[in-house]
Length: 248
Ligand code: ADE
Image (cartoon, rainbow, N blue to C red; front, side, top):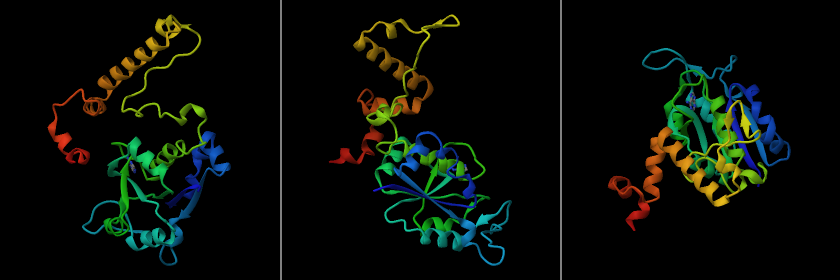
């Protein structure tokens, strides 16, 4: 069955945007995924199709109304698809979330503008709040594009054979090793000799070390998780106790 993305937005013109190009665009044309755009304005109230109002308790900005947003969500046949609200208040999106989402029937993404969406509709409609990083965008649309890109590339047949089995960075919880191509010498910088040696086992070992070093230096959080997972660090009993598989 085709992986289906429904986007609820006040700015439908922002889609498919970059997802209409390159691999995702080709896959969309080929029917490997489908994009269903809904303009939240169509669910707005009154002559002005109002979708937002001032926040209770005061403060700057406008909040999207729960009655308008719920009408849009309920109008979509979600049929087992999670409803996701991109927001900097959400849980950080990670590659294992992306894998889970791609493995299902698709997603419904609610894009917020203004200060946000009334909290009650998020509770009532079991909306999953997801952040794409610790910075603030002007709305959920760009985050929705990021989320969709990360999912669509994992749909079987979207990428060539390159990425099908693997997922580069994060497949084993480490950052990728560095890449090099021709020319072997460029502006006084040479490709590491080992890569020209033809010794496949030595190259694999060099790449593993480079991956580990990059992860340790740049992402101590991923490094700690990797060390725990691979049994190299048993110093944190709390994380083991928190792993439900270890209770049995
Ligand atoms: N909307 C605004 N900022 C965002 C972020 N960092 N992640 C997801 N959605 C957002």
